[in-house]
Amino acid sequence: SKLVLAMVGLPARGKSFIARKIKSYLVWRGLTCRVFNAGRYRRQCRAEDTTHSRADYFDTNNKRALQEREKYAMMAMEDMLKWFSEGGDVGIFDATNTTRARRENIVKTCRKCKENIGILFIESICDNEKVIENNIRCKVTTSPDFHGMDIEEAIRDIKLRIERYKT
Image (cartoon, rainbow, N blue to C red; front, top):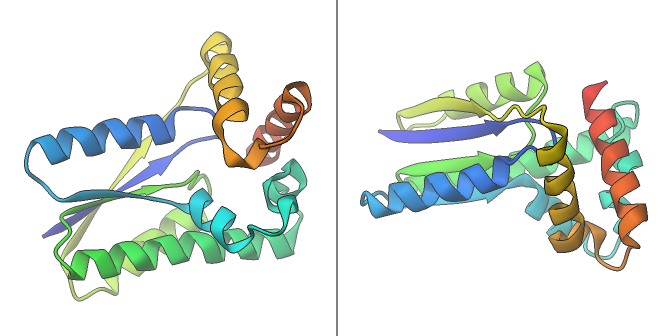
């Protein structure tokens, strides 16, 4: 059987870091493992348009952007399911996955598969302001979402993005 590890959590809470560590461990144990990051799909599909990485794009009231984000997440899911059919063991779905609707969609999508797929949601919760601040600084200096932005502007933008996810 196959396994989906679906990360859950607000931005800058360490989901991608945890996903990479889990992948390293599972590969060391001899499993075929791959991380499918929804943000990477968004960036690849919207490479010419930088508005996809600004906080307004993550506003729950922005219905067009919400539909696009769901589309990119499902693209990652579909690629993971295809990868399972090619022999993959454990797929890590790295996205915020903070809404009940998204999580239900993950379960529904996996259940439609011919493969026997288990699903485990891993939520990363961090309320330590110092850790969050360090994660934010790291993210704005390394993520393509903030390339070319002034660091202080990028920090304001990601904090606003986080607030948008909380609503």
